[in-house]
Length: 391
Ligand SMILES: Cc1cc2nc3c(=O)[nH]c(=O)nc-3n(C[C@H](O)[C@H](O)[C@H](O)COP(=O)(O)O)c2cc1C
Image (cartoon, rainbow, N blue to C red; front, side):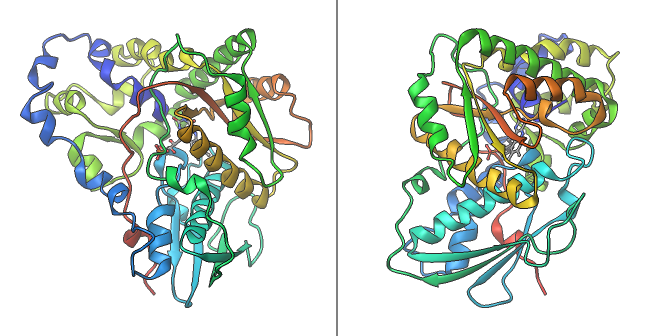
């Protein structure tokens, strides 16, 4: 089961399990209040203000760890050994070998991190000289070599980026969108216009085409859920309830009173969620698919090739469009299932490329639904200190 669908379906999980009385156990009560994973979302409050007198690298890191990234694995690890430099590595244990067999999406997440780093540096009057894969690119999987080196220098001529103001407000919104509220084509164009970096961007806004993409994203999700190893990869990363989220503020957070209560009552079993014959799995499917049906349009990013640098650039562009959408009050939710490179999803992978006119040499790197929706809570994060490599 994939993260967004699980998450957005969580309020409805009671239906999945066929119960009725459990809701009474907590909603709106003191229990609800005390179950918010406050520590796990603290890094959103701890971002150091541009006026802070801390080491500028810490100001930068306190923002860049808020980047979007696949399954919220937060695959970054940094080295601050050299003065005025940040060396970024991939934490190789945070990869997703089944749904992301070539570490493409993980690399995109690292690109999102780098873009927020560069943006924050500008905000504090610093120029960042970025060297990607200084010791070479790594294929087919990432390895222990550095992903990027950022050299920082004070430079009064750098211009701040207006998107910086949205970093703390940005979300991936995995809930259903308001189907009565259309997204204007011009807004979609304004969103993709900020991607920059030579990326090929596009949108799907026409209603018949949106309908086709809803169907395709639904099919791809079902493939992922019915493929044992890809489904299990997500289920294994679920953090159920406050204690698990606080202990491991990454992966797929399934918090809230409702899940807490189910957990306490022993009614939410991981084994059921990977078993297509179980009631939880069967009843859960329509609920999990529901948010996909509320897509009011889509935006996407392609690259000319598929080098590691292309993937980093795609990430840099993606977080920019996510921030621009935030500024316009438009919700965004990446849907990666049809873009994934494992065997079982090949028909949907080919179909989405054909529908979006992806040329043979091009790569579809990001695809996200857009619409209007209630702003969700921020997702958990490890604070940046936890991501600094100690030598
Ligand atoms: C490359 C990439 C792929 C992603 N794919 C999905 C996806 O298929 N489904 C989903 O719900 N979220 C997806 N996301 C969003 C992440 O789950 C999200 O960024 C993460 O949980 C952190 O939440 P936040 O963006 O609200 O901070 C993706 C993000 C990135 C960068």
